[in-house]
Image (cartoon, rainbow, N blue to C red; front, side, top):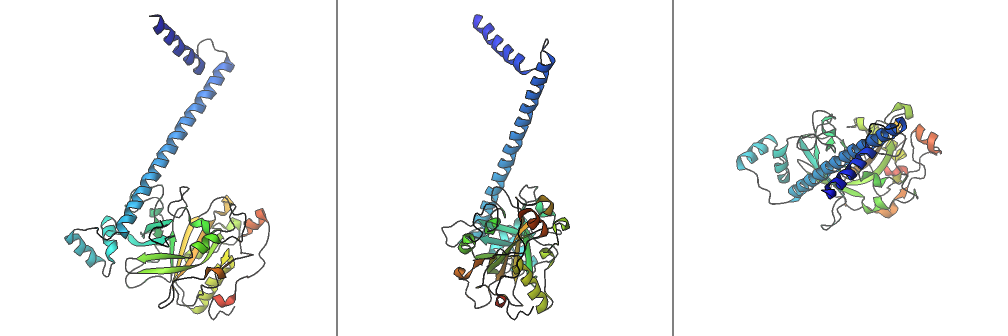
Length: 351
């Protein structure tokens, strides 16, 4: 009996210490209420973090499983369903059939970082294309509500067996976990995490990427990466995402020149000419002016027929003066010192 009373007294003392109690002074009541409020906030915050990390981990596993399905060679699909899909998507590549069975908004696959079979790509995801550019910001490849969303091609420029845009624009979240386009900003040699702006090692290690549509698979050579604002309050907005086709050589040349002016690294071994197909990868970037709502954007061009897929990265160099937006200079200093890339990069360019 004595032991029971002693335990009860301990619990009672703890309760009196934590919760407002009859006879407490006002200051003591306030102290306890502040403490309890802080504890509730902490518990709720930890719960949210736990749920968030759990959902991200689950989505990462699902994406890895999907990558194994895409790259595998023995995934089976019902014969009737196969015939239906092949009729609806003529000329479709075999590996896309199981993905299309899940969601017919699947349009491609993007891979960056695999230089040999033993290396795991840091980007290796299905690409969707919906009816607008909002849906897959908050939904995964299965159409389920998702924190990470999915990588998706701009809905305004459909990719079909008959036609594809000259500039395919892909969007994806910059996830803190590194998933989706979370590792794309590693190409940014002017980032706060970069003590040496001249260090373009990451680009040199990963100068190419692979992009597959439902109908073909191609290697692309990365030729630029830029930090750009999306809000006019930060300065003139370069609307890279609104350009999907080029009616003339002049349009193509001027667009590429504008991209190279803003690129933080220059790649002389990757030349550009009218008729090239461009792939643009766009994601948010953190650590800069929130009012500018900036993006980090990587540009690559498709390897031409008969051209080597390799890039002489030793010719590449950091741009000593990329063209940034006004607010960047206002907060961080500096100014644009003019064009620093060799104009012969754009074949037949006349400014």
